[in-house]
Length: 125
Image (tube, rainbow, N blue to C red; front, top):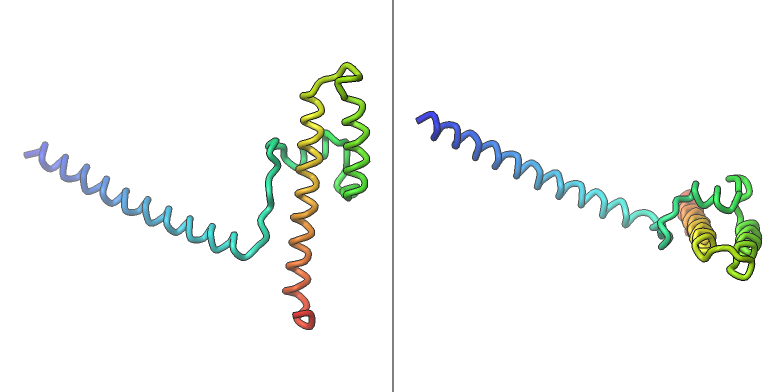
């Protein structure tokens, strides 16, 4: 008799937990999809490098973040670390992916600014 009661409690608990988990997942997916539809998406670099790491690799500060400075640092570091100079392809790859990440970050920030300008100024709509 106790065995049957224990099994009944276990199955009921598992059923309740399963339903709660399913509902929470559905709600999280719906919220994520709604949020993604309302803002520009930020593309990530194929190299998986974060913005902070990219800025360290290219030796840039937040206030120096512009396309010309990124290209300047990229060209210099890429050429200095070339195979012809006896350096590695790995370093060149890190430099390339850092540049790629920062360019995508600039594009993302520009999209955000454009969305803010559109939404904040009704006379342009």
